[in-house]
Length: 275
Image (cartoon, rainbow, N blue to C red; front, side):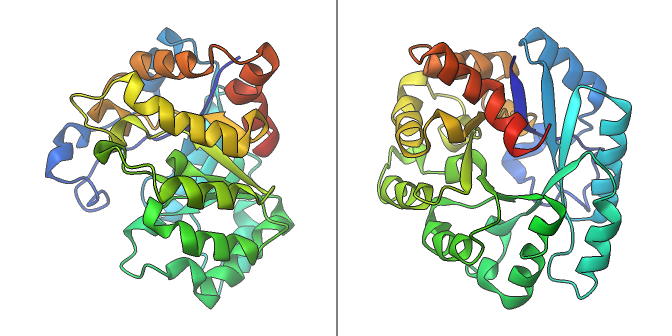
């Protein structure tokens, strides 16, 4: 079984997707369930987890509705206003929807590099474990030092690092990403998604060999028990199609044992997100 633990869906409008830069014009259209189902079936993907792409509870509820109507969407990583005074009430309401498995905030786009250390943000995060909700960490590699401090404030909270913390693959840089990620991985409540790698490389000229050293680092740091596959579709399409990424991922894990392969392909995601 192959579970895609990280993809997006959206009905595009300019107001809500300002993060789509001029280089991303191909993303400025609708990406909906019907298109997702075609590409995932062609690639041999059995189930998915859909992840927020804009910071609104309206989008979270829309994604939950899609998951309720499409059984192959196994869970939702939504957005909630973690800094808001009413966050406890909002979590009580949304956590009644069993498809909600985790929440995420787009930390790497915050002007404040230390946003994740804000008191109000951490008060919100501290409530997640009471609802058995995971927190997905979206950062660039330069945020890893403060991420370690952030995670250490919440030893009972389950965290998942998106896109292997976005190392500078385009530059071929391994340090200090490698050392900081290994330190973060010492926290056993932290997991990691093998996703978003192609779009951190040169979109038009990347190859598998350029990505292998980064996969080797996350495998040695987290082990198969704490890794899961993700596509980051349709952002992925900036650097290649769904099939190419699935095939690249399968080549990464080809020499692992069947048990290790199964963990990264599906078991870890199913366990962490209670799918």
